Image (cartoon, rainbow, N blue to C red):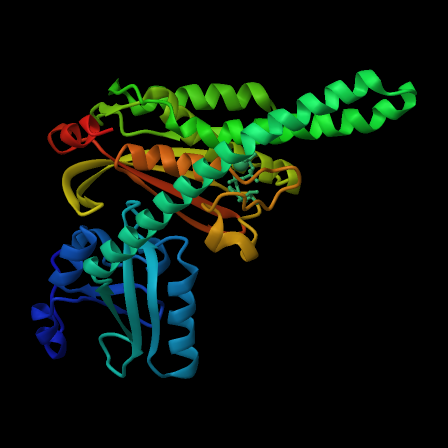
Length: 364
Ligand SMILES: Nc1ncnc2c1ncn2[C@@H]1O[C@H](COP(=O)(O)OP(=O)(O)OP(=O)(O)O)[C@@H](O)[C@H]1O
Ligand SMILES: [Mg+2]
């Protein structure tokens, strides 16, 4: 279908921002070239589609559209992430403006969030994460030694007790010391020297899938949506397995606790081009999404889930995601998460361009 610019919108052709015009049924009637550049789809693919088909599962955008229609005034949503029907994600600010025209009813204008802003935020996160990791490592070392002393003393005391019934108390000390010891050991794991080798991301995912299915056979379906043309990355297979396992296991646990009907996890892989990670530009990165339809991450901890010891589940130690993030950062990648009831998505970006990765690996 050849797209014609309605005469009165001819000026939109030249704007650098993305402009999409919708008719009264919220179907796309026009997109400007800026849209094609920013979102990487062609006009012919989306003309005639409902806006919710162009950007599926984007409640924020739909709310902005509905608000603008109902209030008949412009509505702006700042800095949110939007995914296209081809599963590419973008950080944008969007203004929805109702117009009176025979050709269209709404103008949607998208501005991509300033890449610099995003990079600065990522850098801040990285620095904070490194400081956290160092603090924890030092703390774990400091706690380990006196803990050994405490446990030994409790054992000696147990032998000297006049009545066996008092052992109940020394056993509490010993068991709690062991629990703390196990926690400290987990805090110190990430510092094993990584073993880098060519690694196929799909082998990593298949291993995680079989581990999870063995743990919880009937209750969850794990679907694969793989781009099998992705090249291998240089990585530590065991650490990548652990990172993905920690994320996917949380999903299984949340869905089981919530008794989610038809619970499912999707493992999706895609290539992402021209990615900037920790100020380095990579031509290609693997984008891995782990999506579940469980209850979502509790709102009160949503902003802090990657921090150590933050847990929303009974008996959880709150280290799974901290470790996952550490392992992915060791691969020069990053993890992000969006969550709402019925749709939680962890996105991992892992650079695969060996030229950019190799020198950094040698520093480890
Ligand atoms: N997919 C998810 N759905 C719902 N909640 C989640 C999901 N992923 C993480 N969470 C929440 O984030 C919290 C932190 O997860 P994290 O893996 O770091 O710690 P944990 O699972 O509590 O303990 P552990 O150290 O044993 O993994 C979880 O307790 C859970 O409340
Ligand atoms: Mg966990």
